[in-house]
Amino acid sequence: MEERNLKEAKNVFKTLCQTFDDLNLQYMSDEEKMIAYFSVNGDDLPISFEFKMNPVLHLIVLYSHIDIKIPEQSYDSFAVAISCANNGLPDGNFDFDDQTGTLLFRITLNYDNSLLGREALNHIVMGCYHLVEKYNDIFFMLTKTNYTTEEIIKLFK
Amino acid sequence: MENQENKINAEKKKNAEKIYKLVLEVVQSYKCRFEQNDEKMMVQYTSRGEDIPIDIIIHVDEERSLIRSFSFLPFKFSEEKRLEGAIATNAINYILQDGYFEYDYETGIVDFKVSTSYDGSIISKTIIEHVLSYSEYAVDRFNDLLLSLSKSYITMDEFRKRLDKE
Image (cartoon, rainbow over all chains, first blue to last red; front, side, top):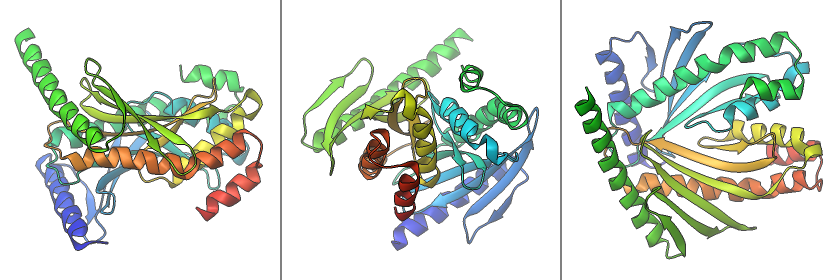
């Protein structure tokens, strides 16, 4: 990896943490690994925010792990549900790994050669918060009840 | 209150127009044929992929202060392959670093989407170049795999094996 990429990522990560400090946010960070983490209480379930830097692609990547246990027999239903949830999203998407049952929301912000505004950081945090908050209870419900494909499609309309 | 709102909207429009100008400069530099819709702040062009040509649409979303690109795949999953399409697009999305394959379960249509916010930011052309090049890269890398699955040239197990090798 180019030295310039790493330096740029470290500077952006510092700015990111500075923004959290200015907002008096309680967060954990690892400057070496360029990872920052905090969580908030949603209406139904806690919502986590994990920021990672991707120096190669010049990205801030925000992941929100959705901490629900998905039974293996529901993996196909989740594949349908995640496709429906992702269809038409303005920014970011839900990722589902049907090998492990991992479910998360991912949204990125590109900073290559640019000066990021606080509004853009706010956009990814709030975008993530609203979408996870909107859908996590539906995902939770899907782990508890069997729905037909048609019913799943309706849930996301 | 209304004045404040008008001021914010005028500022948003001005910023979007600046970004759209950058988008046009980047696409023009590719020296390919393209179509532009200035009113919708949208540009469409075709890039030559390794397997098949890749249609790319790049759009400046003034309301949300987003740069977004879409690339629709030139095939769709038939009704009997609909579930496999959902499983496959999810499996690919999980290994991607940016963007995602958007899948319409009801129609079987697939597109690749990348977006990034420019809200309150001073952004360079390299970000627009990234949005476009990443779309081309992801579509070029996975379109034959998705096509093969949609046409039953490969099974779901073979799809997974080939995806693991990616």
